[in-house]
Amino acid sequence: MEIRLQKIIADAGLASRRAAEKLITFGKVRVNGKVVKELGSKADPEKDIITLSGKVIKPTKKKLYIMLYKPPGYVTTMKDPEGRPIVTDLLKGLNDRVYPVGRLDFDTQGLLLFTNDGETANKLTHPRHKVLKKYRVKVRGHLSKDQIAKLKLENKELGFRAPVDVYVEALPNAPKRPSKNSWIVITIAEGKNRQVRRMCDSVGATALKLTRVSFGNLTLKGLRPAEHRHLTAPEVEYLKGLG
Image 1 (cartoon, rainbow, N blue to C red):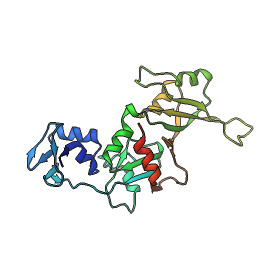
Image 2 (cartoon, rainbow, N blue to C red):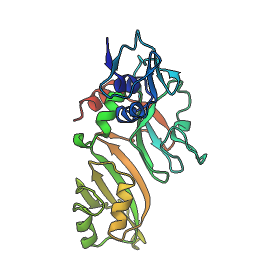
Image 3 (cartoon, rainbow, N blue to C red):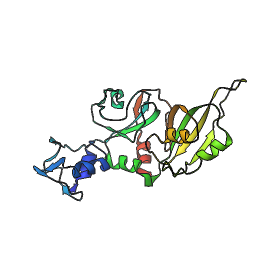
Image 4 (tube, one colour):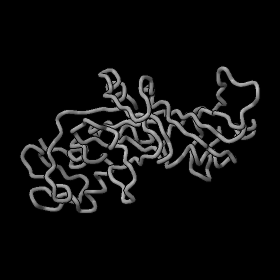
């Protein structure tokens, strides 16, 4: 059966569907030896020889869905020209190729998903599906009511929509002497580059520590930094149903 090339690439776990489209237009894909650049092009992965940058694409039959508690100090890429540690280094014991769903920056920690299911990855990262991501942010000092109010607004200058929720976290057993720092919780339905850090910077608040604590209704419960696990069947069905 003929399938769109970007879906074949995504299903093989080589790139998200959007990234696959760029690879096609850049002339990186061949079908039976012929370069194909048109996005509407189809092929039969069972009959045709499809290559990406000279390597034959073998359809992936087993779909994997993994949650990692990313620690700081890792880049969310498949390789890094600067030689920094990459997140897939933490997926020890995994022989199948998977790629991250979205990104967390080098200094940010928390929940990061991986899969070789390109269709689901594309859905989870596309803005129109508005998948909620919640972050705990340790900021220097204590934010004023005015700063919190500004965080709740759309930021046209930075191109950010209004967050879904922003509030100051009341910590249990807080010391009698006020801390020099405080914690806020921000929930967004976007995932732009360094968005939460840039939101904090825009109101004069420095983010000292940033953790993504949930993705949709998935949380880090049961995981420690650098640990990962496979998602359960109900969790996978939940992700596929988002949007």
